[in-house]
Image (cartoon, rainbow, N blue to C red; front, side, top):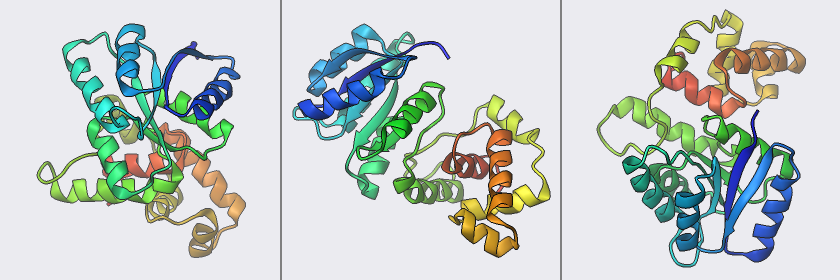
Length: 236
């Protein structure tokens, strides 16, 4: 993976310093800028053109959701602006989550995340896949199901339809019957122990099937697998 250029937009000094330290410790991540408010942050995004921006929702002059929306407007007019946006917040309310994705956020992450998962979130977001904090997975999956039921009508705020490459991946993924059964239970919100109990398998066997599913669907976690399965029509 090439070096990932990151801008950190966060108004609390200690939090901003901590985020920078956590990410800068990773060899292939470089912090290229920081801002304590949305106005300065937007300027950094437009001038530095980083790969990923971590944006706090609770900024003093303009919240992170509005900042994301404004950046996406600039992006529509300038194809050179390709920054992926990772929202970092302590808010896990349905309203905040859906508003963030509706504004154009690529990923959503809680601030109490540990360093390794934060790094994973940034790297996953950089590759173009959404990184969805497990704490809000149920909100995301609920909205995806509602989108699929209502089609293009109604309030559509989340993950768009799959591009042709992803559709091709799903078509050729060749999930086994057992993997399909496990995937259906993942979408239903079951953890490994519950899946093992329902399918009369050991937890170790379930973990093996889960790894196979993630690999075949080209995703890095269970939530992404569930979203992709729903979007690709593998599970209803």
